[in-house]
Image (cartoon, rainbow, N blue to C red; front, side, top):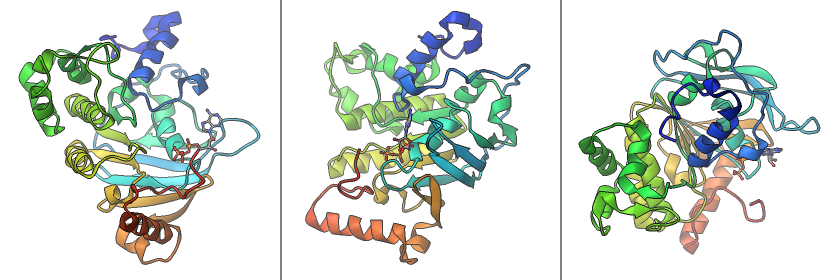
Length: 308
Ligand code: ATP
């Protein structure tokens, strides 16, 4: 497992199995649906990060022939900036993330990172430069230290502690029976959703990728946990090109651009302030959130009844 960062295509028939482990770890992707057609192009080069600009150019995508899931989606995330994706369940937000990680190839259009079409670069180099903070992080049956260090195998103890601090999980780890050596996972100490997400943030801080993809947890977190996560997330996004799939609008008020997706199309885009005043979909979602807040319900961008 620790060798995941060697080029995956060296493994021949083991390729799928190795990739499966990778996906299991960054659990936001639906492995079973993954397209076995995605292979490195002949003579594919490694991705060279210059600034970390991500661009979707007229991207359309279908999982199956009978239905278009993304239609002509175009946007650019400038180096170090944050773009948030919001919209009802099934709008295509996670699909955008999966395409950028190249678990599928686009049906039409193209995705570029620093002007390199991701179809033309090695998958291994692409995935090395992208960090993922999934909704639900799978922990290894190993020490908490191992689980964080996994972000950059071989990193020093002090780097692990520093990542844990910046992810707001260090203090919590000190309360575990064996501190950083405490066994976690299925057969060890069980962590809460918020704690697992902070482990994923610590891993990503260690990995220090140019591009970060965040899939915000849909589950309701208590206010204090959410506040801790917010500051940890701010650390992981700082100076990195970030795409957030947001389920709580409070997370993305400061995003540089918000894209509102509906039925696979971008129907609105702008800053929180701009969209709030526009009286469209986003404004309606925002009003809904304020009402939920007053009613004491958890934040959600997903209207009732639309949740899958
Ligand atoms: P949510 O907020 O619920 O996570 P989303 O906006 O992220 O939703 P996607 O997961 O991108 O939505 O899904 C977009 C559409 O594609 C949905 O209609 C979904 O049912 C469909 N879809 C997703 N994955 C697959 C798949 N593997 N095969 C076929 N259709 C899929």
